[in-house]
Image (cartoon, rainbow, N blue to C red):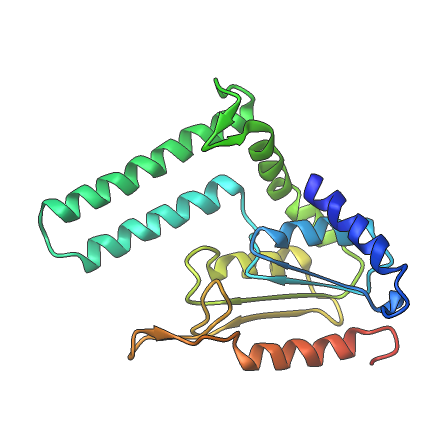
Length: 220
């Protein structure tokens, strides 16, 4: 909630600047910022459009557990048999189970400590609550919405984008795209060469720029 309030104040400041077109303000949120811009866009009708890059749809607990489960799958497939493989998988599984238990308790209000992983429990509860509000936020957002992600993103896999699109329903002017080969950082992963580009994917930027021009109040 603090992050959303800070972002709202930043919008207020931008609107005071002579070098900013106040009527054309756009909210862009990446990853954890995705749910935040959905929530802020619903509150701020003075925002022209909302862009979510690799943003989550499902609960924080499900999202984080999926990440650890995917990592275990990779370790099982890629590491040669032996004690080192077993040790690494066991370590990831332990972390998975720790998060599973802690996030469930934080959500219920029964977590026995004031901090988890070095952060106040209130921070985690706020993060959990922001995910719980995503469905309602995406359904009631009045501005045009773009949700872009990649199919090589194990942090936020394509099922999140598909779920956001389902919750949103058909609305004129929206854009939902899952790009082939893009990672969580919105850069291209080349499987054959086993390397990633060092810049954000050009076609994504081109499509987003084109969409933003069309989503503007005057089409520009």
